Length: 154
Length: 285
Ligand SMILES: Cc1cc2nc3c(=O)[nH]c(=O)nc-3n(C[C@H](O)[C@H](O)[C@H](O)COP(=O)(O)OP(=O)(O)OC[C@H]3O[C@@H](n4cnc5c(N)ncnc54)[C@H](O)[C@@H]3O)c2cc1C
Ligand code: FES
Ligand code: FES
Image (cartoon, rainbow over all chains, first blue to last red; front, side, top):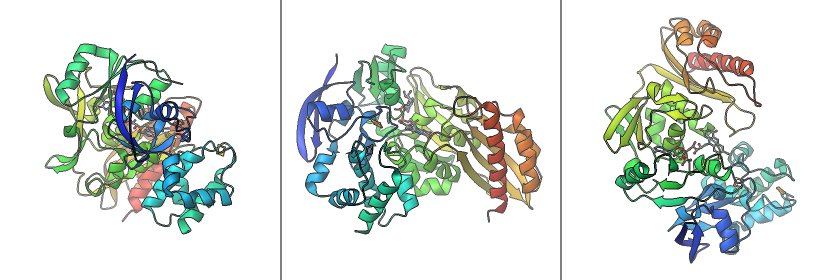
């Protein structure tokens, strides 16, 4: 099996590790680096549970090869929590009951953080549009839109 | 599911790509944004032995205005098209279509070259390229060639690209001065692949529709230019042109039927979209 040596930055720390070429970024983060906050749901780009930040963009971790992340700057829910960047979103999700099992939540937060970075006070329509690629099987989307709206007004 | 094992090559120059493709033939696949390819590999719909990552090739990037039109490098991501002032100005139909392509996180990585090279009948860009008379710039070990959109899309996931060729860029020629544009689609949920979509351009002179060009998403197994509908609409006021074009559509389209929608339903929806699009260009200032 073809292993690639990778050097990248994850949550602000330099990382060097090997991974088979076919490993996607989520398996790499979870299994090699034990960062289990990023979740793999469908593994074909549909659900958004795997949303992480790569070089400043929210992306589908299941559709990015770890091998393609040589030199990249990756942020996961663990790092974004540690820096406090997503604290207002996390508080709003808790307050507005925008999660139940929590499987979708790390991806939701990373996707929502990108929207709040780009749009100061998004409308509910803009929130729904931006979050349309993130599925939640428990909560229903109303509470999630509420939470993102609350965080954007904080 | 997990992808089967493969080797990975990050190409440093285009020569490396050609060499790898020549050596491995159909066992090798080019990797751009990966937003279709990695999904297909994870589902094991495809099991190549080698992926050749082309995202490091700077000659495939950039949006430039040329005398022939707006030239967009193959590696230009959907999000860059969405934000580009040049695209909004010089390729307005593309600008109207891009918000319909997938979801934000996929737009952050997927590329126009990947979408055109894949030639998925449910994708927006191939229909837009056809309606605009865009030209594909291909680059292979034997040199470069230009292929018009009409000849590029051959069938279901099938294009004029040879096994060792890359799509380098696409040029959208300047639209006629009086051109008006409409892109619209119907899908079950926002961001999902369209059931049916329309990319339409037409002139309006003395209140009459002229030189209509309409191409359809999911109108067939490849993007289809609706020439009968265009002929039927020529020279009519918008309200009559809309009815005439919609009535003629069964001569142009042969939409697929699947568990999302039957062929008859898609034809019906294509007619609905045709009427809406022609009405919208008729009423736009
Ligand atoms: C959940 C989901 C929803 C989506 N919804 C939509 C949608 O609504 N509309 C839509 O249009 N798309 C949609 N997509 C697909 C997305 O737009 C892809 O980004 C695009 O189809 C492929 O671009 P890519 O750069 O990711 O290509 P890749 O996946 O890297 O490659 C796709 C194919 O093109 C080939 N290729 C790539 N670049 C070149 C090149 N320069 N020269 C020659 N061959 C090349 C590859 O070998 C491969 O066969 C969706 C994807 C997902 C996962
Ligand atoms: S696991 Fe990546 S989108 Fe579902
Ligand atoms: S909280 Fe369970 S999937 Fe969203």
